[in-house]
Image (tube, rainbow, N blue to C red; front, side, top):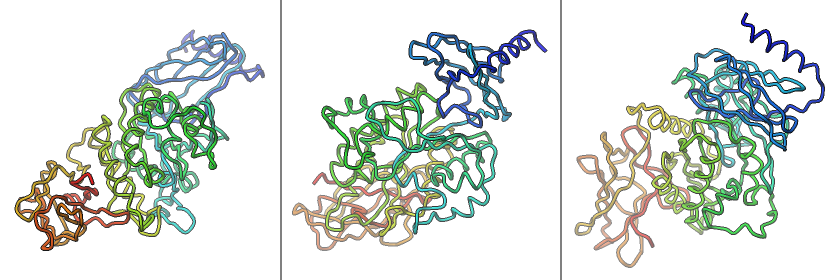
Length: 473
C-alpha cells in the first residue's frame, strides 16, 4: 500500500467522525451514477465557505482540490478515461466529513426532456398503453443501464437542487416500469449496441410549452416574449423559465453526451413560427451551460392527432420543426407521420420513436453511417404542364410506397383551392409526380397536411416522409 493512500485513509477516517453535515452534493452526483467517458467532467457541491474540498477518484488514484466560495459552493474538472466497464469510486472530503460514492460506471450519458410523450412511462398512462412495454419491463435487468429521473419542480429563479429523494437506479423491472418509455427503449438499445454502460437522465412534465424549459438567457436571445412583469400562469408549470430553473438548472453542469427532446404539442396550436426562434435559443443556452460543447440534439416531431378538426395547425408545427434541423447545428429529427393515433395524443408507439432516435445517434454521433436515420426530405418542386414534380434530398436506395397511388397529396392552382391528387413515384425512385384532372396549371402541392394523417410513402428503410408544402399561403 502506498504511503499517500495510508495518509489519505487516516484523513478520511478522522473527517468522517464529524457530524456537522456541511458537505453536500447535488442529487445527480450519487452512487450508481454513470459518468461520461472520455470527458472533462464537472464534480461540484457545497461545503463550509472558504474551505478546502478534496476529491479522490479510483480510475487514476489522483487527488483533486478545490476551495469553496463564500456561499459554500465548489467545483472541480476531472478527466475521465474510456470505460473498461469496471465499477469506480469517488471519495469527497472536507475538514469535517467525507462522502463515499460507489458502484459508479463510466460510459455514455444522455439527457431526455420534454412533455408527456417523453414522460409517458413503460407501464403507460391510464387507458393508454405502450406497445411492448410489459414484455420489455420483464426483461429489463441490466446492471450497465442506469436511470435517473429529475422529478418535478417549478421555480421563478434558478435553483441548485431537485425536489425529493431522486437518485440513480439500476435498470430492473421496479425502476423501469415507471420510467420514460422513449428514454428506456433508447438507452437499452444503445447499451446493447455500444456494449458500454449507459446513463439516462429524464426531466419532463406533461402539457408544458417550450417557454417553460427556456432559461432567462434563452428568452433574451429568442426575443419572442418579454419576461418583465411575468408572474405565475394558472398552471404553474406553464410559466416561462420555471422548468429550466427547477428541473434543468439543478443538473447543470453534469457532463452529458447529448440530449433527446420530445415536445411541441403545447406549442402547436398557435404561434408555430415562434418555435424556429425558441427551440434554437433553448438548445444554444443548454449547450453553453452544460459546458460540454455543441452536443448532439435529437428531437421528435409531433405525431398526427385530431386536435381541433375545424382548425388545422399540426402540419404547420411539423413543418416548422423540420426547418429547425437546418438552423440547429449537430441536430436531427424523428419524423412520426406513421406513428400517430387519431383519438390519443399519446401514441402507443414509443419503441418505434426510440428506434429512430437510436438510428440518429448511431449514424450521426457514433459514426455508423450504414444505419439509415432519415426518411425522404422535401427538396423542391417544378411544374410541367399540369403536373408537379416533387424532388427529395439524396436517398441512394430510393423512395417507396406500399400503394401504387400515394395517398395524402393535394394540389392547387392559383385560386388556392386544394384537391385530392394522384401521386406516383418516378422510375428512378427519386421524385414524385403529382396531378389532378380538376386542376389545370398547378402552383402548389401539399402532403399529409392535416392534424391527423397517415404516412403513405417512405424511404427504403421504411422511414416516413414528413408533412410538407410547396407554398407559403
